[in-house]
Image 1 (cartoon, helix red, strand yellow):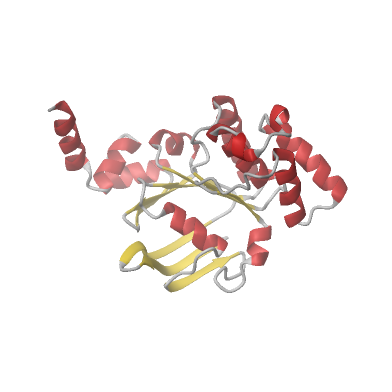
Image 2 (image 1 turned 180 degrees about the vertical axis):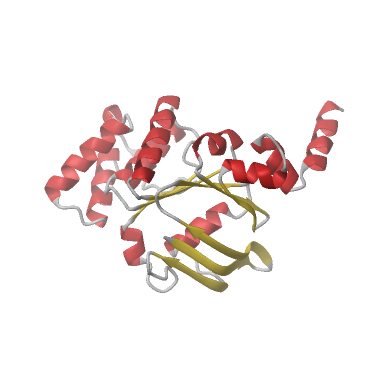
Length: 251
């Protein structure tokens, strides 16, 4: 379980997250839903211990990532939103490097690398330099690296952006399956359709604050709407902004 206790994070004087209290449980697909700049990536980086909270505390399976991030990172498969790859390595070299970081024994590493290469349809790219790959293939490499050590926690920041529809469909199925095996799944998206189709638990973030949490049905009930799009616009009070955008585009 991951617990946030009154957590705030600022960049200068700008709040990225404000007074976040939250329990993220295994056994379900948890979806961070919010527009760009709402704090989704910041929340994930806090879990990893890449950045530290300015106030409050985070506990990840009994560990404080701000003080002791290494044990946490060993049990996490992380897909960042940005291109966090070594471009000078070939695809297979990079996956071998990741397997060593996670301490996989040679025979297990070999089987795991072969498994993720096939799963993410990378077989014809294994000897190519990562820097030469398209954006979509780089996303596949990041996903392969996240799955290589069969982690307990999956932190996936916008995992469906730029990937092949076949892989996207398979990934949704696999994540739901992993959740039934008591893995902790936390993925972020700004795409309402993905959240509606995949989420067992939605965490709606807006301007660094939690606006609503719960199942799709619970979020709709709170917003008193029939669809997630209307719920999002209602809970974030964004309807007027949408009308202004339409007016501007229509001239």
